[in-house]
Length: 268
Image: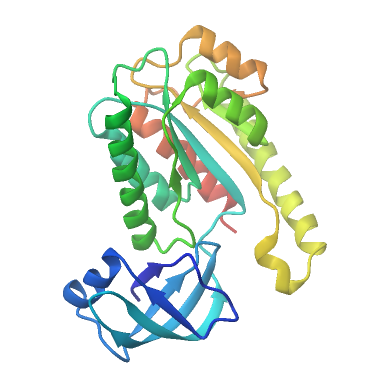
């Protein structure tokens, strides 16, 4: 069923109103009309089954038939701190990581980042990246639209991660072997699942959507990898280095690999 997102929908509402570019998509691309059913998400992992009641070029009105929890979100919020790569690689990274369950993507200008962008170009890029995230969220039936944040310097990214993340991981060529990496992942997953169980035991069924989540930050270097000083700064805030195997992965592959591992281990 076709999925759309609105920001002003609640359980007390009897109908939803869809505006913007989605109106043209519903009317002229999907060719939907009155009495057709659609799924609407309010961006907080809650879905509304709706039936279209009114169509015009400015908006679509639909009555709410049913409300249910969206089960596509992971039990932890994962943030990808991606060293900005060359070309359009970041577009692919965002699309695929949204499909894999990422909660937010932060483009980071690291020491070995080759790309240079002025403020105007950065703003245009971020707007496009968020459209890519929205399209990927619709396709993969996400309960939220993951946000692509403004570009950050490495210093800003480390400060943000240190204050906001409960766990920080970064694949690093000088990390210990795979046994240590497996232990890091298993310990992280066990801790999150224990937290989730304890949290669920302490809330009412009606409050289930309000439960807290642990936050995981993943740092991925650009094409040239991390500078030694950057790796040391990450380690100083408690980030765990990990290996992704004996093969050297491209920057656009590394983040997807970590997301795949975490998604598989956490998706319950």
